[in-house]
Length: 383
Image (cartoon, rainbow, N blue to C red):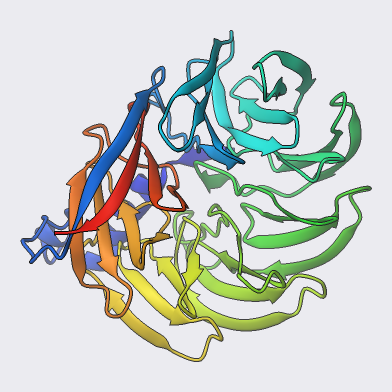
C-alpha cells in the first residue's frame, strides 16, 4: 500500500483539471483584503513538543469536563485547564504518537506510528495498558466506557477491552493500493461505532462484538488513473445536533446524511472532501478538496452559499464558533466566515508552520492546535 498526502492529491487533481492552460490556477489563492468585522483575541497558549512534526499527522486535542488534553508526535502528552491553559500534568513517553487524543471516563488514548494503542490515566498520565495493533494508528481511538475502537492505516478495526486493552473483536477492510495519508476517526454513539474507510465506505458496527450493522458507499472508485480512483473517507464523521443522523464526506465522492440506527441515506450531495463537516444554524458546512467552503441546508434540500476566496489553501475541517465558521490553512492562518453568506469577517495567523488538526469550539473559546505544537485559545470579539 502506498499513500500520498491530501496536499499532493489536491495539487495533482488540479493539474489534471487545469490541463496546463493556466499555471497560476494551481497555486494557493493569495490572501485578499477584506473589511474585518470581528477580531480574534488570544486568551492563552501552551506549547508542547514538536506538534505534528514532519509527518502528515492530524493529532487533535480532546476536551472532557474542564480539561483539554493534547499530544505531540515526539511522545509528550499534557492535561490543561481549558479556561486558562494552566498545566494539570505533563508527561513524556518513549512513543511516536500519530493518532490521538481520545478520552472517555478515567482514560486517555493515543495511537502510535509503531502500531500500538496506549491508555493513560487521565488524572496522572500514568500508563494503564498498551495494546499492539496491526499497523500505524493515525486517528484517535474512541470508547463508550466498555470497548475502545481503533482503526489502523492498514484498514483493520479492533475492539479492545476498556479496562485492560485485550482484543475483543476485529474487522479487516480491503484497502486500495493508493490512499490518502490518514484514517477516519471512529464515531461512537451508544453501542454503535461508525467508521469511514479508504475504500469509500462507512460501516456501522455493534461496538460490543463487532457485528456489522449497516454499510453505505460514500464514494465510488472510477477513472483511468490511481489518483482519479481515490475514494477515501478520511474526514471525521459528524453526528448532527438531533443525535440521530451522521454526516460523512468522501474524497471524490459525496456528502451523505445517514440515519444512525437503520443506515438509511436521508440525503446526498455531490462533493469531494478529505476533512469532516460541521453543523449549526440549520446548515451543514463542508470544506471541499478545492478549498471552497459550502453551506448546505441540513435537510439536504439546497446549497445556501459557497465561498471560494480560500481556494487550494489546504483548509482544515470547519468549526462553528460564536455565530461564525472557522477554518485554518497550510500557512497557519485562521479565517472566520459569516454564517449567512460566507464572507470573511476575521483573520489571524496562529502558527507559521501551518494548521492541519481539527479545531475545537467550547463555550467562549476556540482551541487551535498548530503544526508546531502550540495550542492557542481564542476569543472572537467585535472590533
